Image (cartoon, rainbow, N blue to C red; front, side, top):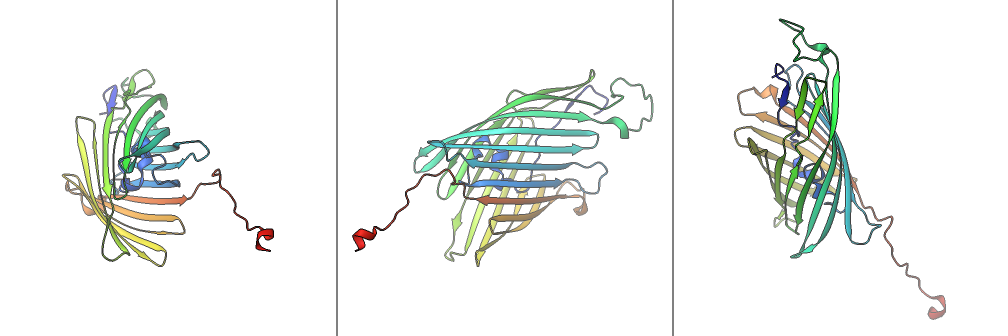
Length: 302
């Protein structure tokens, strides 16, 4: 792959906790929770292999309650390291929503900056070290990209679709290397199924990602149990021809902590899966909300 002057691969990272990361996969997901939603996600993929992929995402989104109407905004910073390659994706999301068929339909747009870097300092050349396909020193480059999406939320379900990297950004790295980021579509859907026991519920979800050359689908069954103002949850995700992932977490004091492990079904071995950690925080953001303070009149009471 390094012997060519162009590198093409899947750019965006897949996280096990995709179902709680709407703002990352869909610009219309900004403000989806109705609260200030901030989280950090870390993924250590193909554990045990040298120079394996490692990804970290910092993300936050909220409703803009100081504006009339239903406006939301969000941002994210993704750092992705794969061997000698380092990728960063910085993005801003904006979403406007309105009521439709008893639910909420949001339309979102994304403006992002893609940065890529190659550090050849750890390369060992077995042949001609003067090959022009390899940079002699660290090179980097950046460019803008765009995305858009729709998200519909109802009381018991949600569904959305987004198109990211619509402009197929091309990052030039020095004079002989470049990275092409292909556009891709992302479809999500999920729901909440209450059971007879009000303390237990099931949340199925689905995500399908495709760049029209390859695709990945994730089918998730998640269950939660409410115990003394704490929520414990766990579940399993099946990705056909790719992997099976297990995750377990808890919600308390507006904080969500969860760990997941993805086991690949392609024969890599159980010890070479991917570790996924999610830490999130939610709070009501109504400091700009206008309200009326009610007072009893002493004169009337007398």
